[in-house]
Length: 544
Image (cartoon, rainbow, N blue to C red; front, side, top):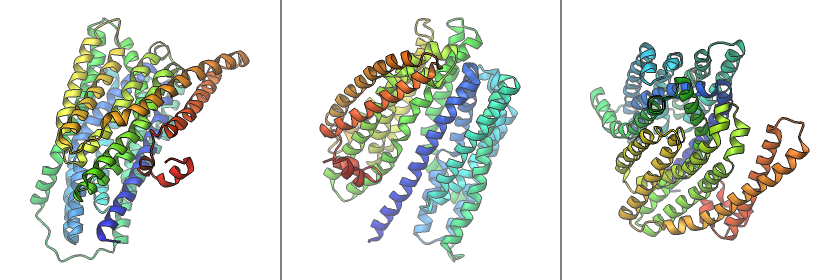
């Protein structure tokens, strides 16, 4: 095998490991969010979301671009056989991470009440304080992750992410349930749920410390006689790579924070709702975001595989191969995203009734979930088309599309939330509009700037027809099964026949969809090869 072939194999292996971990973390996150939503209720989930928005923004500023920058510099030094340079890059990067993490920690710890008041949720202060150390630990973890990723070892990153998620699930749920059982005040219960995140990040950082030492031991790297660059030069290189990436990530997260503040304040100031009712509505909207984000987590493995495959074809001058890979990758993303979004739309009511309790979840949850189901497809489509643009070297377009979509989202929230007839549904509508507009802009950019662009008509038409048939099946089957089970199981809790009916409808709809995409050739053999174990799956399903 050539060196390039070996590198490609190593990269794809690492990408598969990392993508699998991301999918696991997303699933654990959804499992965490559902019972947390029931324990905290509508008002508690609003407080929870405000806390996390502030945390995520500070996290992006301190970690969004630097891990990528650190991994690039480590990889470059390692490729040139400069072990002393690798070590110094890590040390400079780690010190930078620690400094930014400490600053972010102090901002959250010292100004926790002021931050909570600014975002119209004074009760979030305890949660912000409980979460403040996590910013430091994640910053420290990012240094170790960037180092290991630069050496093409994705296992430490993957394991540490799963550790974080599991501790958050077990400890966060445990503390929230215990505090609620003891009858403690809601802000304290929210802080208990959030404390699991902080402990999880601390344990992940500890694991990564020992994982790095193990990576160094296995590599048997000599001390090296190379002369490393100065600390100032390394820091300047880190800064130059990280700043554009950080700006792209932080702009959209800042818009999310603004949206959370707009939702809470606009519901109160424009419609005269009390703070408690506004928080309840906002909390109900937050509950639907767990299911909304879940489909996109399964697009990540495809996205990671697409970029090197397209880039390799471009490097070889194979424009037709690059086009086929782009088309196949986007089509597979659509084949997964369309049924997921449609399922959330047509089964929105029973999904919310099975998963969540509460007056506001019952009254508003189904409508919000239906809108968010439509948005779930567009966020997946946006991710897939974004990967094509990145593979062709057009990363800068994200700097334009995300702020435009985000600004439209904020503007729609401001207008729609003020209408009493729309109320909290405006938040879901603006989310749909945001990702739909970004997706449309990406389609235009792909068509305009990509040589031999993929055919979106060819990509979307057959999967869309199969999805319509699947959605109709799910709706009809749910109605039939629930009609029978509610009569047979009249003396059991309502959620039992609801859950059974939902499971039956989803199961049969999936079978119908799988048969249709194979029969209509919406799914091809080449598409299957994009997936892990794709050749075996294609043979098993007899995909041509």
